[in-house]
Amino acid sequence: MRLFPYLLCLLSLVTTPHLLAQTLLQGTVLDAQTQVPVPFASVGVVGKPLGTVADEQGRFQFTTPTDLAEPVVVSCVGYQSATLPAATLQATGQVVRLRPSGVSLAAVTVRPGKVKTKTFGRTSSSSLMGANMYTEAGLVSDALAKEQGTIIGIDKDCRLRDFNMHVAFNRFKSVKFRLNLYSVKAGLPDQPLLRQDVRFDVTQPRGWVRVDLSPYQVQLQGQREVAVTIQWLQSEAQEGAPKAFGISAVPAPGHSILTRNKSQAAWQQLKASYLSFYLTADSYGASKSAPTSPAADYELPDSLRYLRYLAAPTLPNLTNHNHYGENAQAGRYVAVKGGQLYYERYGKGTPLLLLHGNGQSIAAFQRQIGELAQHFEVFAVDTRAQGRSQDHTSADFTYDLFADDTRQLLDSLGLRQVDILGWSDGGNTALTLALRHPAYVRRLAVMGANLFPTPEAIEADFLALLRRQLREEQQLPTPDLNRTRLLRILLQEPLLTFAELQGVAAPTLVMAGQHDVILEAHTRALAKALPQSELVIFPNTTHYAPQEAPEAFNKAVLRFLQQR
Image (tube, rainbow, N blue to C red; front, side):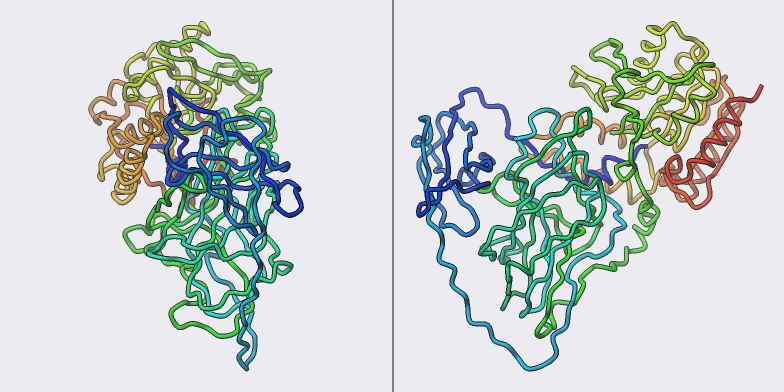
C-alpha cells in the first residue's frame, strides 16, 4: 500500500489531448510603443486548454485544431490584451503588438493608527502532501503557461512586502515563474491586480522561496481575499533527472487548490486542500472577516488525525547524491511481457532484490542501497510503468502481474533463491511471488505490506481519500492511464488471506511504522500467520520508516538476512 504519489502528488495538471488535424500558430510579441520584445507574454485560446508562453525574445509557437473557431488572446502584465483570429497567426513572421496599459494610481486612504506587519496564508512548512505541478515525461515546453494557486484572506487595506511558497520537490535545474494576484469572484480568480510583471526563478531543490515585493509597491484596498497563483514560464531540466516540481499542501476544509492548463482555460478547483503560500504585508486596519493567518495552524479533525504522522521528510525532500534510479553505468533493461523493466546492480554477494512502492522508483531506497551493497549483490528494480520501466498494456495492474514481471527478471539474470526486500506495494509483490513462485525466494523482508484493501487492514479515512482522488482523476478531460491504474490497485488489491500465508516457505521479516496507515493489528496478524516470521515495529515512524529511521531499518534488515 504505497502512499507517495497520492499524498505527495495530490494534483497533476493534464496536457492537451492528441489532435489528428493540427495547425501551427506562431508569432512575436512586441511593445507597440518601443517595438522591443515583450518577454514571456501569455498566449491562449479563449475557453480552451491551448496556448503557450513567449520566450525572452517575445517569440512563441503552439499547435491548435485546424477547425479552431475561438480567438487567441495575447496578454502580459502591464499591457492591454490583444485578441485576434487564429488564422492571422498561421503565416510566419507574424507580429503582435501590445499597448502598455496606463498605470493609474488609485487614491490611498491612510487611516490614523499604528501599522502592523502581518502574514496571511499558510506559514507551516511541514507538508502532508504536495500539489504536483509538472511531471512531463518528454516535452518540457508543454507546461508553459500553466497556473496553480490558492485563495488567501487578507486585511482590507495593506501593502505587500513579500510572497512566500514552500517547494516540496524540484528536480529541475531552474524554473522561472510569474506571480499573479487576482480579485475573487464566486470562489475563483477574477480580475488581475498587479500592474507590473513579477517574475522569479527557483533553483533550490526544496524549502521556502521568498519573492521581495517591496520594489513593486503593491497596495491592496477593499479586497477581503485574493487569489495568489504562480504561472510556469520557463524551465531548464537537469540531465538524467525526472522533470518534476511540487508545492507543499495540506488538507483544509474551506480551501481549494486552483489550477488552469493555459492562460485562457477555465479554472479548476481541488477542494479541501491548501497550498503552502503566504503573503507578508503592512496592514493599516484589520478586517474582522479575514483572520491574520487563516488555516496556518489548521487542526485536523479526529477522523484524519493519523495524517499528522505523514508529515515527516519524504522522498522528494531527500538529496539523491548517488543518483540511484538514474545511474546509466549501473542500469540495464530486461524485456517482460508487455513492457520493459529497468534495474540497477550494485555490490557483490548473495543476490538481494529491492522492490519499491506504488508510484515510486529505485530512488526510494537511496538510504538503503549503499549499505546493503556492502554485504549483498543488490538488484534494485523499477516496477512496471514506474520509474524508468515501461508498460505497453492498458489492463488493470495486479500483484500477480508484478510478481510475474519479477520472475521474468530473475530468469533473465539466471537467479534463483534470492533475498527480497519489498516496501509497501513491493512487499505485496514479494509475498505474492513467494506464494506463486516459491523456488525463487530464499528470505523475505516486507515493510508496510497488507493482505487486503479494507478498513480492517488500512485506515478507513485514507481509503476514502484514495477513492476521492481516483474519482477526480477519472473526471479529468484526459485521465492519466498509469495514475488511474496505480490508484485502482491500491483500492482493489491484494486479495490474499491469512490462511494462504501458510504457503510461504521462506523465512519472513515483517516490518511497519508505529504510526503506519497499515493498521498495527493487521501487521501483527500477518506476521503471526506466516510459518517462519519475525516482527519489527519501528517506534515514532510512519509508512516511511526506511527514510525516517534508516539506521534502525537497515540494521533490522541486515540482521535478519544475514542469519544462518
